[in-house]
Length: 350
Image (cartoon, rainbow, N blue to C red):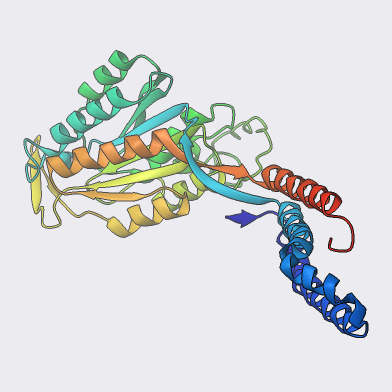
């Protein structure tokens, strides 16, 4: 539980003072009664029903405590159905995915797990696919049509290189088409900020003005998420942590999956050899920066379990519930109860 206005909680310090003042008044009343022996009968009756005298003030004290807590505007986290509308699969298709330390191969295992993941998602969730190796490309735009997504996953072709950051940027450009995110500009630069062109070349026209960008808290965009799977480390393209900062500034969570055994060795495909070296610290940092989570899968079974966990996590998400109104209603009920009891029991014993 968190409080939006925690400074209001300082007022709770007054409650023990009210209790002390009430106890002092009760002791003073008892000393006053001892001066009049003729009131012995009344005192005996008062002791017999003393709880009646203290119940309304006790309820009033609880009502004040509830009102002060309501004034602090508490928020509770409770699991609820996620409103996630778009999930982008960002898949590594580098040559190292041909390794067979995960049977039948890393690529085949990733494709099978991704198919099961996509089919288990609610129908209202749109799914897109981005693949990356030396470059990154959008293979399938977000769509509710599962058959299109499954066909895109089946079309993966292995290539050289691993550009994790470029894959994240390509996915962000898909999620925010009006934001002017340009993967080519991040890789090679444009006329903006590069100074004068080389001699003999004409000035490149300036890029059109982009809409103003205001960063948002990491993880605050609940309508979209990225699921990144890779089995290696970034060797080219946009810096992976720079891309993670871009995702964090846009509130997009990136869930990262590191695929393969730690001693995977090497892989050979299409006449090229690839050294298998999983960069877990970078994947963990990406997940941490974006309020996502990192998973490691070193077998086909483990990969399927990871995708099952991710499916559950994306469908169920903690939601903030403000408790000010229930606390205020509780305080009102306590006040009404205290007033009713005091009225019913009014008189010398009230």
